[in-house]
Image 1 (cartoon, rainbow, N blue to C red):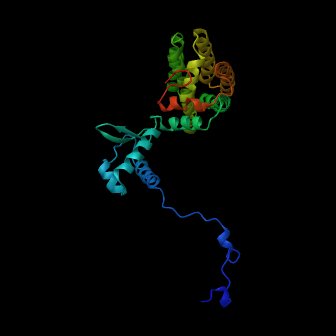
Image 2 (image 1 turned 45 degrees about the vertical axis):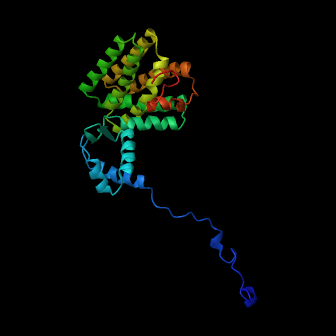
Image 3 (image 1 turned 60 degrees about the vertical axis):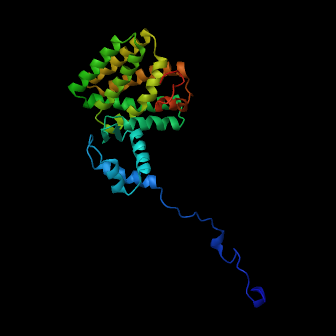
Length: 273
């Protein structure tokens, strides 16, 4: 029996079919977990903060997935702060003040292996604008809250951990007084990392007193509704704050080393949890 060539037919080659030389990725089914996450996110988006989600059994029926897939998605959403799982009670939609966005930003910065210098530089840009906007838009209630935090920090000069928390609380309040929600969330995203750093860099009572003096200067400008002065004083304060951090941590220190502490799984480089 003769083969194809003997009958006058040439065997097909890749030259005869140019498309055969093009690499084509195989078609794969969309990941079930991602699909479940997407659909559940749509459901959550239609609920108010504090609302209770349907039971696990009901969600499995609604989404057409098994319990293991649903539980994986719920764990992811719980970690991100989108929902809160309360043992024996159920799963609830998290509120805007539950810190999900901020935690996600902090973890993202750690995974990106940003340097201390990069964080400080961006923080300075954002906080200068926050102080300027706060001077324009702050309310009397917001001003009173900032004054209270400055006073409490002054009284905590010999309690470094408490002072570090109040230090960052003042900056968060300034950002909120800007009445720009995006700006406030971005700055709050720096808080977990900055709190770890400040606890290392700020331990002496005299240093805490210097910070209180710098905060008070920013606060006076905000109280006077002087945006230019508020921005300038925030710049001076953050310049001093950067010098304190660089002296302790170094400008090129990576955020990646703090990922375990941010996730709560182990101490950070300074032994903090």
